[in-house]
Length: 214
Image (cartoon, rainbow, N blue to C red):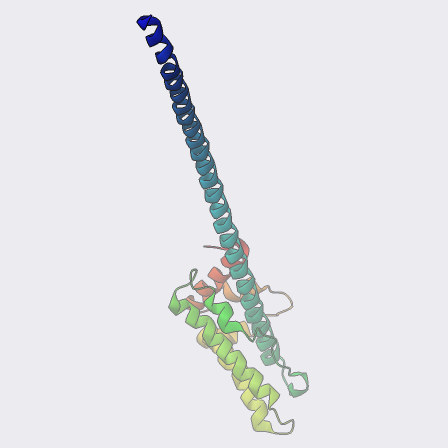
């Protein structure tokens, strides 16, 4: 009788233990599964974030390259324009004041030049700044030209000469012998007459325009 009673008394305890064990086991399994799912989710999120960060950097790098290329192209166009106009004006004999006009240029050139700092040394950028300084002086003198004032006209002609002398030195007279209708912009900088410093800078500028980087 006592044995039977003991069994009867132990059954609820046993059932409680089994139930508790099942609950604990279930909780452990649930927690483990939840941890695994959470870990996989975190890993996936990290992969996504890494991919997004990489794509963002690539986009920003590409955008920066395009900005540099655009600025280099604008600078090249400004230099090309003033070179051809200088040669054209100085080649033609006689009074040219009726044909004088300001040189089109990027008025925000300082920002454009500064964007090239990763591609050029500071000394090389100064070459470009010097040209823009002469162009600004030239445009100022043209805008303030008094038509019948001979000194004003001579000053403008001298501005054109100074610009060509800055690039070619004493060889600028050889450049004036060229027929601008038959030559390209590249022939104006890739030759034996131009100063080596400007030759290197304008050559670099060409590469940046074409490739976006050196």
